[in-house]
Amino acid sequence: MKKAVRRLDGWTAGAPANERFPEILARLKRAYPDAHCELDFSNPFQLVSATILSAQCTDVRVNMVTPVLFAKYPDAQALADARQEDVEEIIRSTGFFRNKAKSLIGMAQAVAADHQGEVPATMNALVALPGVGRKTANVVLGNAFAINEGIVVDTHVARLSGRLGLTRHADPVRIEQDLMALTPQDDWALLSHLLIFHGRRICIARKPKCGECVLAELCPSASMP
Ligand code: SF4
Image (cartoon, rainbow, N blue to C red; front, side):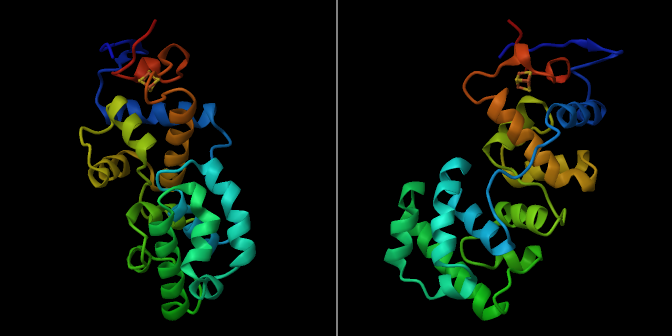
């Protein structure tokens, strides 16, 4: 993409990230007032399960599978007692289904055995669960418990953070640290949703629609037609 520096009220897309970011956040909030987690869930157990299934898979596909999974295994104890091949059959279409079934059952067994069947609400306890890393833990804390402990960095968040010049890093942990330094803590969960919404609709991976982008004047990667 062509490097663009555009003036906006006296500052430019080449300005430091901390100067541009409040306006970037404000514009994203205006553009996507309904930004939210697009995985369907009604409790923390369902969200941690859906997030495990979402690896390398669309939320739409996960949402087609989880009603069947949750009807058959409504809580951690039920899933802890499941036969791996039965779970595999239900989640097959989400890809990597053997590993995901193993993670789901392992997660459920740990929740049932160590947490009285309730998904824990701390980062340390969540990342100790099989199949749960920092990204999944951030999804669960931010969306099921309304705890802003960190920022979810998925492929969209990583791509947009780089294009918008909010980070120079490629490693998700470093990207998360840079975003946390820029963003008010109350907005940490929301920021991920905003970037994901924008990444799915406008700043798409292969061909970003810079000409339609509300962030173009603020974006050092903007390439206008
Ligand atoms: S679509 Fe917007 S955010 Fe993405 S590169 Fe273009 S101007 Fe930047």
